[in-house]
Length: 555
Image 1 (cartoon, rainbow, N blue to C red):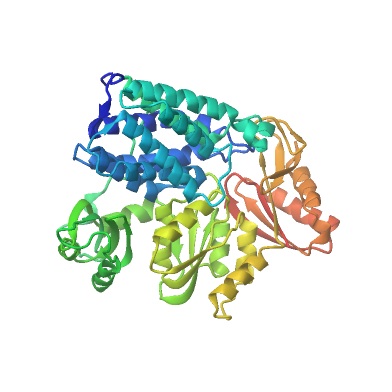
Image 2: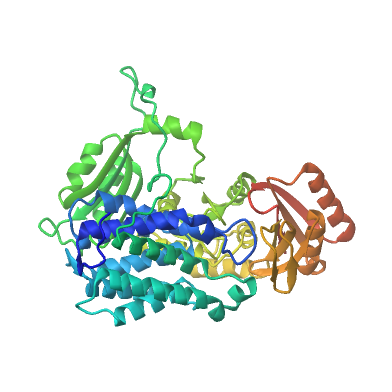
């Protein structure tokens, strides 16, 4: 890399170098960001979420051949938006989406214009969050971008800008515990802000000519394809998985006003598993079809392709069935009025959700947050006029809501479920007979109101949270964001947690066992409940989930 500290204008190539170096620096420090989790449990995923979000934009960024900041920024932002996951990832994608808007019409930009773009990105990120919380990544982004912009003028160099930007970001990040009491109590800085700082430091290094080294590829690698699965004697059965990014052209259509349903209606005549949505003037589409050339012919009436991928699904099918567990499965593909998409974790709990009436269960949760694109694909697979969505984690709700804003084919209702217990309660009383969308949604919210969910896992560090003294390696029990108990013994922790959750006042207990809970521990759990809480009806599910040894649902 060349030292560009003294330049005052950047082109698309330098913009790419800066962003890619920022992503590499985040990747090199993912674990540090993950470890800043407020709760001392092995599910910190902020670093992973932010990296998967920005790396999702790196592929399109690198494939954009025009040496234009505008084009590069848009490709990056569009890719990040689809791959955004977790609150921090969604906010990060909005930061770059706002930047891309500010850079429209700019094949090159001055330092002053770049500073303005960072500032515009912050404004869009704040707009995207229903209730912005200070002391988070939002604060770190806002304070650093604001001061850096105010100290930048037409004579400022890139080096001067990034010196100020990173310096102010470090100060802002150090200040986050003073703004958010939960950070001060846990004695950590905000993890999202830390992730943003690593990106900014990587960008600064790129400007100074220092390339960050990070192991592995920036993009996800697929499995090697065994071409022997389709020979001269094979018969095409599954068709072609066809994906395109179509840039609408004003010379062919009204790009801004174009209705994506024009393409969706056509795709329905030649294929299935259709996903198509519009972001700005770019359409992303996915279809399974025997005739992919018809897709290209039809779509080229309205624009030109930024990216095309066509894969023989016989090869794809063999690889997937043997080696990959699908992220989601369909219970029913027939079109209907009401459908439900939920997030689950562990094979047992996922199967239970299907058995209770869920149409699509996305395999995800803490440490494995689904992306916006995964939700959009799930909505399409659900194939209903009205789709109720249960995110089941406070760190997934924002991605689900962003997917709702992008999806136009169904009425999407995202319910604010923050744990699997709330989803279990809604599904156990699932009833569409009222035939009134608002009434059904109101009933679902009411159904989850009296549910209490506790979780047991192992602490990865010593801490004092909510007055509970925790030693590294102890078992801990908590509900949502409130720490309740800690003990060296797993079953003692379960019993203490049940008492804190006021099991004496409850009638039902559902215990979802994690993959590491032994048969002996399951038997002891059932005996403890039967002996100490004889009035409680007890049910158990072999959930098989990671992270949480027990998910305890009380009603």
